Structure formats: C-alpha cells, structure tokens
Image (cartoon, rainbow, N blue to C red; front, side, top):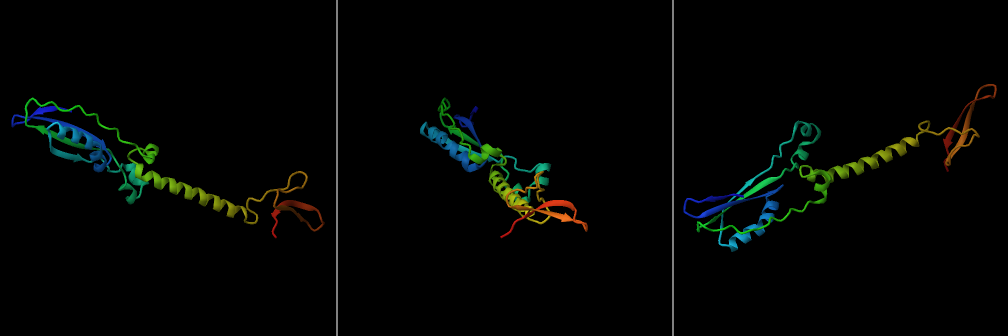
Length: 179
C-alpha cells in the first residue's frame, strides 16, 4: 500500500486484494472502494493478476485434463485510487478477511474444486471394494472358513469333509448354508 504522486498534482494510492477468483477479490474490495469514493477519491485503474494455475509435473501425471482445469491459485486485484488534491489522505479501511469454504479447508486453495470430487470418488471406491469383497466371499472355495477344533463352523456355514476310499477323513471344510 503505497502513496505515489500523480503527474496532475494529485495523490494516488494502491490497494491489493488476494483471492482465487476475480469475483471474490472484487467482493473483498467493495467496502474499500466505497470508503475511498466517499472520501472523494476515484478508482483510476483495476488490474486483475490471475494466480498460477499451471499444473506441476506430478499434477500432470496424476490429474486428468479436466481436473487440471479446476486448479486454483490466489490471484491479486490491484486497484489504484486517485485524488485531485495533492494533500489528500487515504481513508483507513480494514480489508475484510475472505471466508474459507469447507473444501478449501480440507484441500487448500489449489485443490478446493477437486476436493468434492475426491470425496465422492473415495466413497464410491469404498462401496465398490465392499461389494467386490462380499462377492468374492460368497464364491465357493474362496475365503471360506475352516472348522475350529471342535468341528464347529461360523454362523451361516455348515461343516463338510472329504473321505478317502477307506472312509478316513482327509480334510474338513465349512460350506455356506443355502435355503
């Protein structure tokens, strides 16, 4: 926040506001602009400098092209205020603090628009994994329990055994009971 003399004999000052999008930065600047206009200053220039949204090498390997387009970075809105009076004093205005949304608090500014997708994908992956494991558990011979020392099987399973030609038990197993 500097105060620089203007060639016309007036005064100028610059205020900057950081936010991921221009709309958010303009919303933060609204109270400052109103205070300067009320004090007799005018907005001479508004310059939006977007943040660096280019993906890094790791991000380009891990993210899809659509996800790369959702990366955010803090940009800067630079507003120059000018007054015709050379001795004009800029008003003291405190810049409001930008509210951080839930996804930004989870993943940071850069990944805030991807966090919701990652959460949904994670929930879908867990549900899919549970479904696959339940299907695999019901396959015959896969992940079937064995009888304990007393020959008892867990609930939902019945004991079974294999005998050789002489009638000797060669192995025991549990098989799923069906209706």
